[in-house]
Length: 492
Ligand SMILES: [Zn+2]
Image 1: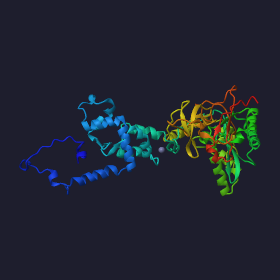
Image 2: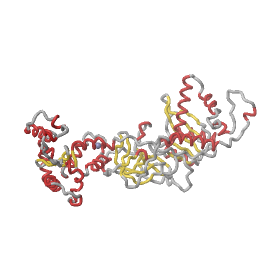
Image 3: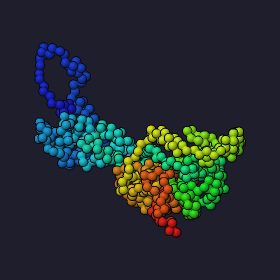
Image 4: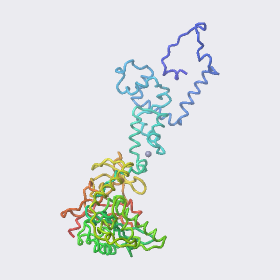
């Protein structure tokens, strides 16, 4: 009882019963027992039962050994100065809560919460975060069990550096869409991708200006097979200024680089591990797969379907044939002779701009830009197992919205969305056992450029990136691109 009342400053005045004009609550709602010993017993249970006696003894010992706690206990027992300025500087954080502070047998309490001496704070912080609850849950647990003046900022720091929590943080939000450059000529910006349908590999090659796409069934996925297909299409439509692909091995081989050099087109690879940045090819793959699937279901001719589709006006845009060939091609619907006469479409670039900007506006509604990263900053790289690997930022990478990061002995290129900022400290040995690497090529580009950017100038040189080489494409999403063997491939 004494201890409980210690936090109050009571003035007890005796009044005779006849002077009590209004019945006081306590006289009507008294406790059933007046046994003081019982009351003391209850209090002992409340304090000691919370922790094992071993922990209580430890807490007492450390509280008594802690100079700040000793001074605090003295002030709690002797009474606080009336003015804040008279309070010793190191005790000032406790002044606002002085009414709640008590000391008992070497323990200090704020209300029902133990005040933890400095030597035990780290240990108890780990106990509060056991099971890795989130930041707020950890604070809630602290709020009902223990206290020291910097407890909440200490918890924030500890949880923000907790490796298991950081590794399993949810994916970062998508970033605002970066619009591809709008081409001003047919068959100037093209993109290609290889996809599997019904167990067979197919190549899709699409023109950004017209939306015209070609589909080829492949007999294999060697660079030679692909080069042969590309040559066929380039012979028909001309050589594009730019071909955009992902970083698959058959696109990054020496043979493919040689093909790009001889046929004089700029080969651009997408942001590593971020296939969305090759959105043009991704959309073409989707269209091609739908077409193949539908033709298979109604057993129609895929070439007839392609002929028809290429003459189909698109939403807000002329048909692919009109954009690419400036004419309708003869198909299965009768048309007047005049319809087959060439007629140049002049509004394509403007219409494309409008279509893409309205698409961007829709996409960006749920997107949020991520803060740029600085060299030397510690980050966590996203892997199949979450944000699993600590790395340090080396700088921006040539690929769009990507950074070069160092983890262990290797250097990687990652899209910004796959790099999570963390206040943890990068430890260089944390990536032992990285998989072996194979060569991947990408052209150097400024990070501000979009995934389909302007043509590279003659003086710029492609750069080799090496990466681990798994053949399965979907599972290669988080494979690591290693860029520590940068070399000049044009010199060979
Ligand atoms: Zn944690």
